Image (cartoon, rainbow, N blue to C red; front, side, top):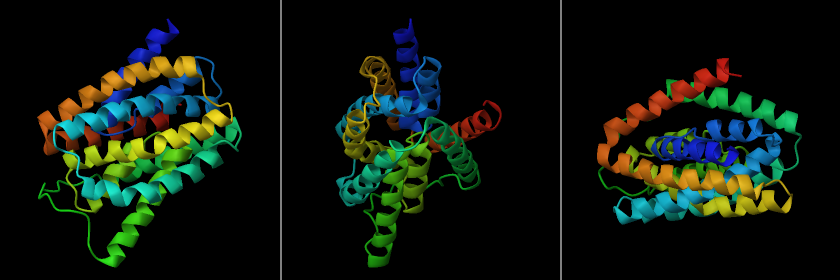
Length: 248
């Protein structure tokens, strides 16, 4: 029964994660509900994130929506940030992690409601060329990686805000998002696994659901387009903000 619950939660979370973000705000509490300590739930959730983003990255690549010009500059700073974030996440107590997760996610959700990703036009343009803009974008990717390595929950909102500010539309932005998360997740997962903070049995059931949901998210993103994805992003931010503020 636990495995079926995790598969269902994973399918929902995988769809939401690829479309917008915040799916881990569902799956991490479910893992905690099933008896895992918060730090172990945080590590176990990475098994599902890895499976989801393998499938989603391939799905976007097959549909011609993954732009390598944006992926390549993001890889190294994101990986560096993720390794530092994952290492720090293994060194804090369960109670401290819960407090940090709640505080950070409330702030991120409220910020995203105020500064939701805009309606950038898909011009096919590459990343910024000026040195200053490239440095700023690299710093933003380092921050994305640190956040993803440390918490992961709600990271999609943060990445979509970064790529939107850089001028990328939400369809290609979602494709970039899953590729970037895929690039660091195996390393972050290894950090948690080496510390004994991964339940592989529960992680596998969750991963199966996330993989199915991720494919649905890719399909809906490409099928529905920019304006529809933007509405989903804003709606997801509001729902998860309310849940964090009043849902406990």
